[in-house]
Image 1 (cartoon, rainbow, N blue to C red):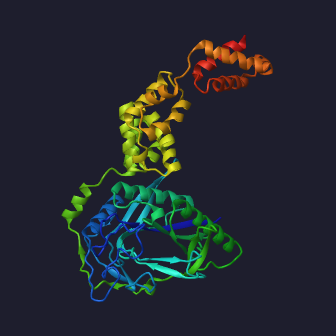
Image 2 (image 1 turned 60 degrees about the horizontal axis):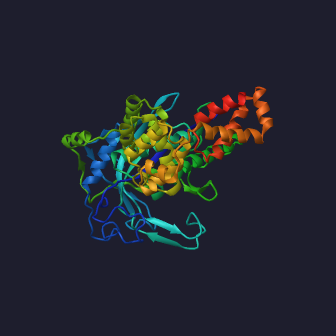
Image 3 (image 1 turned 45 degrees about the vertical axis):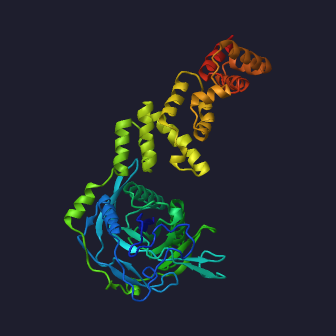
Amino acid sequence: MLRTVIGLEIHAQLKTETKAFCSCRADVFDLEPNTAICPVCTGQPGTLPVLNKKVVEFAVLAGIAMNCTINKRSVFDRKNYFYPDLPKGYQITQYFFPIAEHGYLYLENEEEKRKVRIRRIHIEEDAGKMVHQGTDSITGSSGSFVDLNRCGVPLIEIVTEPDLRSPAEARIFMELLRDTLRALEVCSGDMEKGALRCDANISMVDETGRSSNRVEVKNINSFKFVEKALEFEQERISKALASGEDVAKETRSWSFSSKETFSMRSKEEENDYRYFPEPDLPVLVVSDEVIERIKGSLPELPWEKIDRFVEQYSLPRYDASVLSSDGDIASYFEEVAQVTGKPKESSNWIMGEVMRLMNDKGLTIEEVKVSPEHFKELFDLMDKGKISNKIAKDIFPTVVEEKKSPKEIVKEKGLEQIDDVEVIEDALQKAMANNPAAVKQFREGKEGVLGYFVGAVMKATRGKANPSKVNEIARRVLKG
C-alpha cells in the first residue's frame, strides 16, 4: 500500500501599490507588455533597490495569521539563475534567514482537525513572463516573447512541510490559504490572474518506508488543476513503482490542454542557485513594537468567522464555510440576515441564487447585491403565500437587474399566487377528466400519482397556484 506525501510552495502576490524595490506600479495584470518597468526592476547597471515598507508589513501580517515565529532579524539574498525573463540574472529573495517560520494552519473536515505545518514565509520579487507561440513551453515553440512587467512585483513564498496526504487535501489547503490571505487583504488570491501560484512536491512511500524520488510540478494556476496535476502524478509514480522503474527527480509542468504533466528539467539543487547575501540591501530588522502593532490590526480570520457564524446564526458548518470564503460575501450575508431575521433562508439564497448569478454572468458580489430590505420583502411575500418559492426565484434576476422591489415586479407581471379554491378545483377537474386512469391509480393506493395532478394544476395556472393549497385540494378531491 502506497502513501502519498505532498508539500506545497505557494507564491502570493502582495497587494501593494508599488513593486518590492522600486516605485513602478505593482498591479500589472492586463497592462501592455513592458510598460511598468524602470532601470531598477530591469537590473540596469548602477541602480540600487529600495525596500517597500508595505511589503514587510504584509509579510509580517501573513506570518502572524499563520501562527509563525516572526524573526526580528532577516536577510535578503540573491538567487542566481539565467533565463530571458530575469534580466538581472538573479532574484532578490530570502533564503538563509526568512522573515517568518515554524507556523501552521489547521485542515478541518468531518473526521478530523489536523495541523499542516508551515516551514517558512519569505519575501521575494517576481520574475518576468515568457509567452511562447503555439505551445505551453519553450520547447517546440516557433517563437517567444518577453514581458518584464512582473519583474520586481512583491511576493511572499509560503512553504509547507510535507504534511498533505492527498491531492484533494492539497486543493483544500490552497483554498484555506487563499481565504486567509483575502481576509488579511494582503493578496487578491486570483489564481487565474497569477496572484496566487503553486508549485507542488509529491512523492510516494511504500509500507516499508521506502520513498520514491520527489517530483515538483510547477506553476499551477487553479485549485482544480492543483488537484488534477497531483492526481496525475500520483498515478504515474504509483505505476512506475509497481513496475520496478525509477522515478526521476525532476521538475514537471502541467499542460492545460492535454491534462497531463510533462518533464521540464532535472530538479535543481540549492547549490545550483549559488545563493549569497544581497550586497545592496541591509539586514532587515523588525522591532517588537512593529510586530505588536501589526498583530493588533489582525482581522477576523476565516476559521474564526466560521465558528462565529455557526454559533451566532445557527448555520450548518458547510454554509458557514462557503460564506466565509469571501469577506465581501460574508459581510453581505450578515447584512441580509440581520434585516430579514432569517439567517438560514438568507444563507440559502446567497449561496444559491446570488452565487449562481455571479458565476453565470461573471459578476462580483457588488454587482449582484440586492438590498437587504428587498430580500425581506421577498421573504415576506413567500411567507404570506403571495408568491411561491419558484416565482421568487424566477423574478430574482429582475430584482438584481432593474433594482425594483419584489412587490413592484409581482404586481407588474401579475404573479401574485392564486389561493382561489374554485380556480384550483376547476384546473384539477380538467386534469382528472384528461387522465381518468391516473385518478383510478390514486384511488387504488398509488399516492405518487398525486404529483402528476399537482403539476397539471401548476402548469394550468402558469405556476401561480399556491402549491400547499393545491396539494391539500387535490388530495381531497381525488379521494372522491
